[in-house]
Length: 262
Length: 289
Image 1 (tube, rainbow over the protein chains, first blue to last red):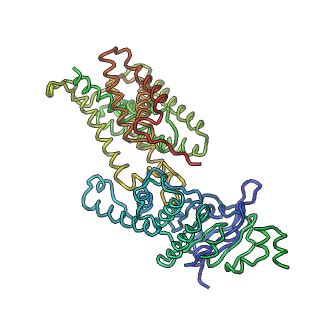
Image 2: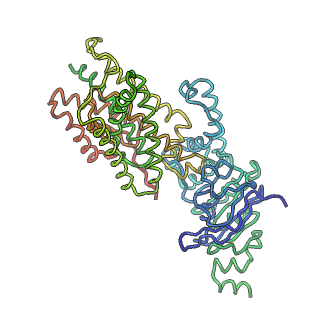
Image 3: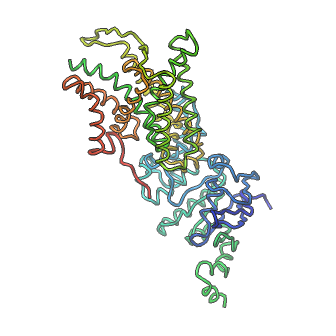
């Protein structure tokens, strides 16, 4: 078996007496789309926050490309190649869509203060290539016509896609998506599905998506893990997970599980 | 006459603009109105005198250079010693810390340099030169020139470079910025260093115009008013606010009464808060739920 791109090993997160994640182990294989589902409060968002360094793990370890990343700061983890989006988006609201993406590219198009002050040919070349790459990413998520709109004024579905473009601008190996389909209409979910499948095919980006909207994760995921009350209660292919009595119990209650099982 | 008033008033306005810019930068970066900033302006000017006392015979310009370096270190110290440890504290705690900081600086100079005013040299000659029917003082011209130069550099940085935009992004949304790989703590350190250096530049420029005493920090209220006038979250707004305040003060001082000159800034402060709280160039704040 090839080495996992991301390996989460026995990771726990506690807030005072509350156990948000209880010894969770999970892997994301290179080039795969891994989903994590579970009811509200199951620990899905906590999982993303601990991977990206916003929370600190109380126990366990997280390895990305074989290197420990738990305990590192969010920007350091981003620079190693993990990007993410948020359920409620964390865009730079007053800036345009294009600027949001270009800022993420800043690291790759560095120039000195003198170059910027001179505003000469070299500066324009760098700015032009950064702008081209940003436009390409906006086109990829279907926002080609919205580049000059302020991020805060875009409809919510487009803000979500803009955040994906901005995350891609950090040139990640792994993209974490926090409930990308919540609040979207069925047609928008289909469009999102296509974007995510394209991403994996064209850019060799692995994806870890958390969601409780079934149509998205069932359609695109290679494997699905199920969290409930901070524990992993099942993992497998979409079909296997759909039939698991534990999963049905977690979502619909014990009675339903018995009804299905009998 | 009017032309003369306008030309003279730009001098004060340029200094107000610098101080306002410091207020806005710190506010953007930390969410705090730094009430000790006026005292940092005073302290910066005193640093020049202290450097000249420490090294006997040190000329003016090297002393200014030392003052700028020391104030950059002071900015780093303020961030590292106060604002970083308080980053998750309540807004009130941060504001009290900024007030305390100003008091410490003000009472430090009172204790070590005495309560009395010190003479402070102008950058250039004070002899007025007639230019096109208007009298221009080279010393004042230098103040305007230095201010405009600094404003231009900051404008280029924040408006024309991706790096500057990343700084603004970090101020706008820390979580978003850290997750695109921006080292937010470094950005805030940079803001404190730049704002502290700005304070010293403003102090060196304004000290000869006013009298350099521990209470010169009251100039801070002028910069604060200019920042409010401009919208408090807009860098161009701060500059516009500073220049406007300088002109208004001069007009009131010349045509109505020089006793009312200082009252005007408090009057403007109240009027702006009542009539247009977002200032002249400030966008309406979009509050996220």
